[in-house]
Image (cartoon, rainbow, N blue to C red; front, side):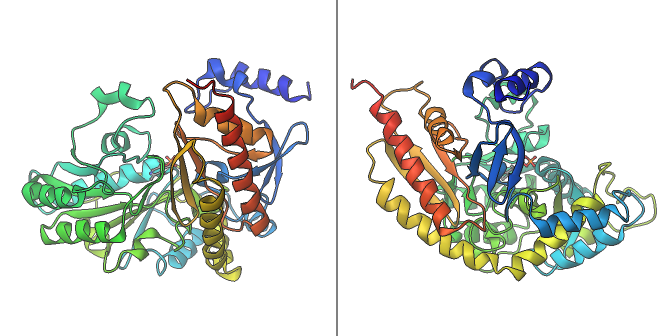
Amino acid sequence: MADAQGWIERDIATVWHGFTQMAAYAGNRPVIVERAEGRELIDVEGRRYLDAISSLWVTTLGHHVPELDAALRDQLDRVAHSTLLGNGNRTVIELAEALAPRVPVDRPRFLFASDGAAAVEQALKIAFQFWTNQGVEGRTTYLAFGGAYHGDSIGSLAVGDGGFGTDVFDPLRFPVLRCPTLGEPGAVDRAVELIAQHADRLAAVVLEPLVQGAAGMALHDPAAVVAVAEAARAHDVLLVHDEVATGFGRTGTLFATEQCPGVAPDLVVIGKGITGGYLPMAATVASERVWEAFLGDDLSERTFYHGHSYSGNALAAAVALRHLELLDEWDVLANVEARADQLGARLAEQVEPLGAVAEVRRRGLMTGIELAPPADGLRWGRRVSAACVERGVLIRPLGDVIVLMPMLTSTAEEIDRIVATVAEAIEEVAAAEPTP
Ligand SMILES: *Cc1c(COP(=O)(O)O)cnc(C)c1O
């Protein structure tokens, strides 16, 4: 069984895919990847797909990058993994040192995890214990935002705002204060008011700066982040920035927080692009002030009793370290700026004017194209994506929002191809709709 259909049958016989209805999986013509070159994935029948979603927002430079492959092989000749619980690893130290001057946190300390959700969970627990360690009582909840997504573990679900079929878990979510998404009129004032009113109950404010990715690329201005950060500081509430999606260049700067003048979060969560999309790694980055609140006697209750088996995996650290160097060596952020401008221009010419498009939202290379289907239940997002995949461009939608997340090293030709393909696919699906 070497053909795609054979592999799909083997797939459904043993593999359970996340965020995927397995009864419909095979019918949605999944791509079964065998290998990759650059920004293209190659399936089991040799068909090529331009990966326009960076493999769900993780891949930055490309697939099968010789320099990253070599870093991984070199580390393999030393050690694959050694625990960070009570002991250290040379490559992890080197990575933390390299990241330290680049993250938007004062004198940062890195607590590594394997996934974004786990690193968010760490941030929530650190923020909570930061207060109890100082004898402050009652700081037991968080301010979170409408449309927020922070991952799928129970704690990260609780600060997240539901949707995507996760409402079934509502009984498991712990209560948080919820402010409307910051892009909405009046939301910034509301956030500032909630922080002022409830500071003595709040361990932290948890925010995705500038772009709420999973909300379909909901945008807000740097000024909104600045206002929330100032209120948090004024009322002594910790500020947590979830940069899992926005980090590592997607919005045009290495971190979105850099675009928000004077904002210095107490905790920043990073993940997704940290290893260039190679290996599962994430981190909770704590400021010196937060870190100091955990110092005390050996085995004392001020210790952070939390840790994951694969925290600070050396293979992932080696790739992450080389990735950070390549971002500089290849001047990747300059390419992001040029490609983002081009992407914006092409979308304005070819996609925004389409009648089937309600709105295009973009910051840097993070893009959401909101479709305007004439009725509910038409699955336009799914169908437009399928039409793109048929044309060799891999897309995965969020409901009726077509998400474009081109890699940071994309060429001008690839950006043109992605936009032209999406425009064609939207027109095809809209044209197939019987006029009401
Ligand atoms: C993807 C994402 C997460 C969760 O990361 P995982 O590695 O999928 O657990 C958390 N926060 C944001 C903003 C994300 O986009």
